[in-house]
Image: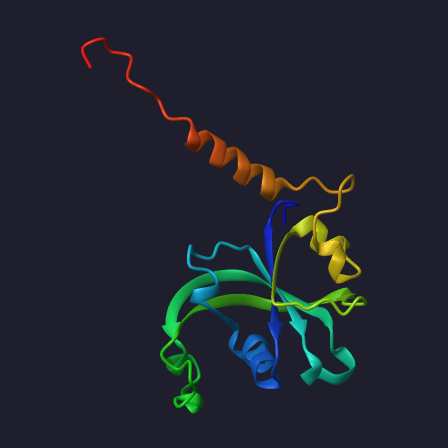
Length: 164
């Protein structure tokens, strides 16, 4: 585990989905939400109101082991008539499920769908807002790495030959 490891927090809305995470060791993410691909080291799981006393918190996480594409109907055959049955999802294979102690709570009731963060923020976080960049405490390595990559790509070599 490195401070700059990428963590994606995703929402778990149903008990059955947590069972897939815990027992079958996979989690699904809609490809439409991540059209440029998915590159994360860990997944963390934000539990919704379906989990009563654990509603509104990140209580579990797991290391990513691999990613494959699958249609929703293939992942959830009991829901073949679902309106998004033909939609393509990332099926993220995960390792052992660990409990996040203490959990990361959503004290402000901020809406949560997907949150990208880093491992150092994740392990230190006590509430959802801690997962986001905070000036002066954590360096936003992901932002600066991507910004540097973008700037390098913007500078293209030009031809210096006089015959051109």
